[in-house]
Structures are given as C-alpha cells and as structure tokens.
Image 1 (cartoon, rainbow, N blue to C red):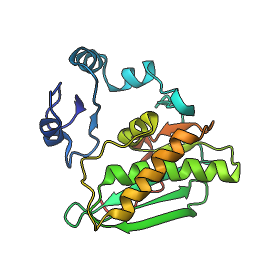
Image 2 (cartoon, rainbow, N blue to C red; image 1 turned 60 degrees about the horizontal axis):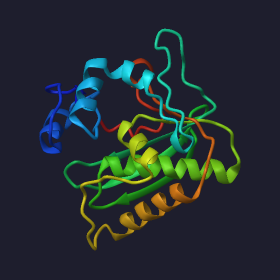
Image 3 (cartoon, one colour; image 1 turned 135 degrees about the horizontal axis):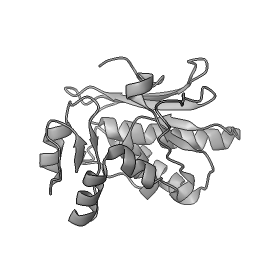
Image 4 (cartoon, rainbow, N blue to C red; image 1 turned 90 degrees about the horizontal axis):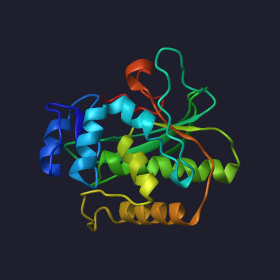
Length: 205
C-alpha cells in the first residue's frame, strides 16, 4: 500500500508497489497481512496511521512528533545507509546528532540494498547503546527498517551469493541479537520534511 509515490493506493504485489516508490523522494508505503488492513490504513492516512498505531513490541517506541512544535533530540544516535543503485554497493553508519561524530561506519558491502543497510544500522545502534549503557534514543528515516526490527527479521529480496556472504552473515547475527536481547531504547522516525536529511545521511542524493 502506498501513501506517497508515483501512484498511490493499495497494490496486491510488491513489484507493482515498487514501481510507485522506487526513486520517489519521500515515498511512504507499508505492507499489510490483508487487503482490509491495507485499505483501512490507506484511508486513515500516513500520519494518522502511525499516530494511532505506535510500535511498542520489543522495546520500540515509534513516535511521530508534532511537526508544528517538536524538534529532534540532539542527545541521540542517528543511523542511515547509502546504496549505489547501479553497483549495489552499500554502507551504513551511526552519527551522534549533537556533534556529528561518527560512532560507527561499516562497509562497503557488495550486492546489497539500502533497506538491508538501514536495518543493520538500526540493530547495530541498538546493540551499541545497550553495550555502552547509554540511555539515549535512536533516529532512523526508514519505515522498512523499523518494521524489520519490530518483527525481528529482515524481508529483503536480495539473494545470498558468494559475493555478499559477509552481508548475510551480518543479517543472521542481527536477527539473532534481536531474538536474544531486550532493550528500552526509544526508536523515533526522523522527520525529513521538517528537519532535513538525517545527520547520518551520506549526502549522495
């Protein structure tokens, strides 16, 4: 289902949905288990849906802040990924918002995708904050990564190959970490339209 894309509406397959959101700046979309759920969410609207359906499983607190008054929390970790659509080479990183300091940077990884990078960055950030016992939130601009973390499993369509074996090992490790760990770290959706690009952005758009 697509709230914002080349065409909006409810689609019954990923291929058609992807055509609407691929390379569409600010695309907003989500998958659902049933047609009825998708149609209800589309009618409800993007902002209303996420305001009325906050993510609470596994310690996630997804919050859409009041755009007229709120500002991002500077004492936070921001995560993002970048993937070259031609070469399929991906990297991801985490940046401390208050100073712009890079706390971690991984890659490049061949034969990957941006969604995989966003997911790995988010799990890496959660693990890092738990390890260091830091009580600060994480921002991501990826609804897909939030969904994958919520379900503790990636849903990438990228196929494992000898070339990207290291990447898929990281995916297994990320899923295992989510299944075996609890955390209280709030995860917030970065408000790109209001705040601009997330501090962890690679600046290649």
